[in-house]
Length: 66
Image (cartoon, rainbow, N blue to C red; front, side, top):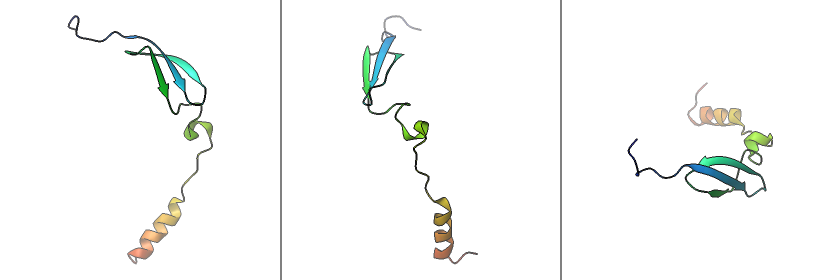
């Protein structure tokens, strides 16, 4: 790597809107985020599943497919 052209890589304190905080590494000393793995629906299990089968039947009916 070339000298004196890269930003400093330091420990970063990351704070989420839900109150969770953790430590990571970045070129910024602290970051504030809106969503993290503790409050994201995919990781918490509260995600809503879209009815994909209904969409397929709607497509087939639209184009008269069997």
